[in-house]
Length: 264
Image (cartoon, rainbow, N blue to C red):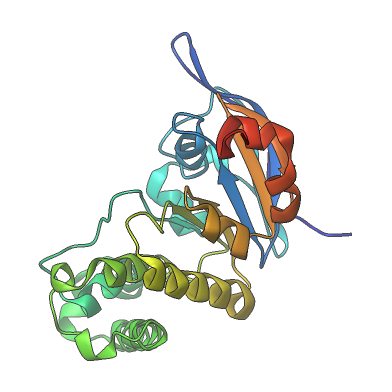
């Protein structure tokens, strides 16, 4: 039996009288890409905000199933979801530190483990062995991901000086530096040209296959969704109207009408 990495059941999010998410149930598996699609305002980003602790869901449950542990995501607030549960995310708008170097942006993602190694004291300033070892490890992890996305030669350049497509990839591997169980990507293909989208697909498939990381993907670029998704969940006005494979989704009358457009 396939043990799901993420189980979301009857998730509801209300803002006053507005129901943004209405009794949503879906699951996501380890080393699979699950895409959440739907028209603007369908509630896709709200789902991410609930999963990652930015919003407290009005009702429902969200559980992350790690090796021998089942974590209730509703108990964690924002940064603790990444730190304790291993859920990382990116946003619609790029949130790199543009005046820090490419390498430094990846090091920042590993701040928590470096602080743990320092004992939250001045040990780091005195080159305590625990801190030095963790710092070396963080640098190696950063260099590994820069090599994967072909940016080793730009390691010392300001992140803000990178081409847009490279900034997108850098943001994704920054999230991967914490070795997450679940990676939530909010429209990573937005603004990319065809070549950059192809590179994005290659990166996400690498993360899925080689790192065995579960990926939740919100995306409007249907070519990306259809090419790399293992499972698709379709929302409209906060409700789930369909779920299935990419092939099944493309042929669903409900999806064609609500999202892909009706055929003439």
